[in-house]
Length: 141
Image (cartoon, rainbow, N blue to C red; front, side):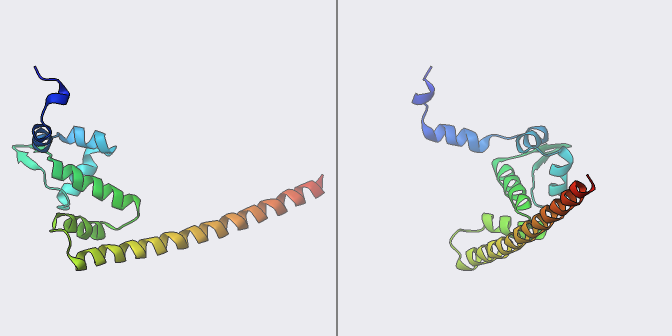
């Protein structure tokens, strides 16, 4: 029996490409509920194979789910996520696709930076209010 180091890389890659996962495995891997996975399926964001009532997830489904969840963490709405992950499936190198994604990234970054400034201002105001309250409390003895 060959050692793992002796197994040709192509054979391992082919096995990994052909591997499938259940909804429970996919949900556990990404830390989401089965309901969340089914929701993304209902929206057409992922399209697992169906065998009767069983969902069979392929590598492509896992990749797309990872992209969906990353987009959600970054605050993108689902329709923007759909556009971006659909671009993932399109042939690479199309200038307009890359420019679209970069534009979305610029918009999201600007939004997050504004939120950070708003949070910093709110925290500063809260700190000042706390300082005044403590000073008033000290005066009351």
